[in-house]
Image 1 (cartoon, rainbow, N blue to C red):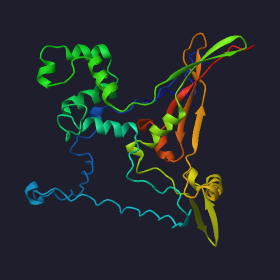
Image 2 (spheres, helix red, strand yellow):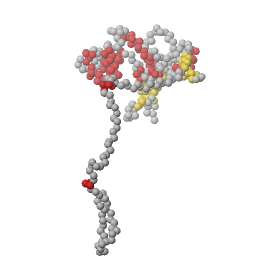
Image 3 (cartoon, rainbow, N blue to C red):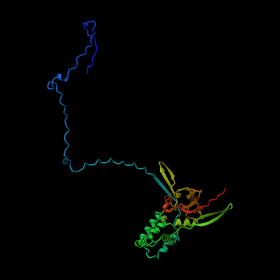
Image 4 (cartoon, rainbow, N blue to C red):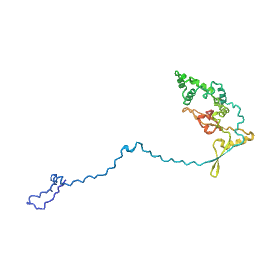
Length: 322
């Protein structure tokens, strides 16, 4: 767009009474005055770029998929340095079986003697008749199925007969387990008077519990009787290593003293532990259970709740002394 500019005409006015008029610049030429398109300069032609070669057809690529990239080689872990260990065994006759032909007389021997005259001595599921009986019992006890729920299941029509079960209720099942399986020592009740207060204590005979642990078939191949001293070679020095109780100093010292009076004697160290247990969240009800085990059982076994290597020995009485 052209902008008009005001300026004075240098020519003097023709009449002094008539002022000079402003002169506008000429307008830009119209489009009609432009030369025709044929006479104008043509625009430059578009630039052409080379195209990439066409991809090969699918038929040329083959029907097999491309081979996957092989995974990086696995790192070989650095092997731990070999630890040289020396074990020194206690001599003499500690832990030796003196009378292997004697009947130990534990509950498991009595159980075996009781099933010898059963209808099928070769049945591995005794005192249950069939594997189905054993599976039902294992399922109900492992998953804590309630007694009412199990009884209701067994009383459904034809369930007991179709499965061929020897029990029809939880009461009948518990009677088989209580009367025909080895049981642990029973609890006894004792009453004591302390400061004018009567205290009840529930306990088991510790000697009976010891015999029960000592005679357990699942512990028989793991019991420890022979003492050991373990030494580990660290560089040019040899250090003492302590694992279970039979590798310690106390047991070795006591065994040495007993050997002077009774050669070949076997020591059974007792482990008794207790801890306060909160029973309820109201009225502050608590108890002090006492647990019992023996050091002849390796610690990795008596720490497993499934093996029941720690036996409940009793409950300490709780008094309200002030």
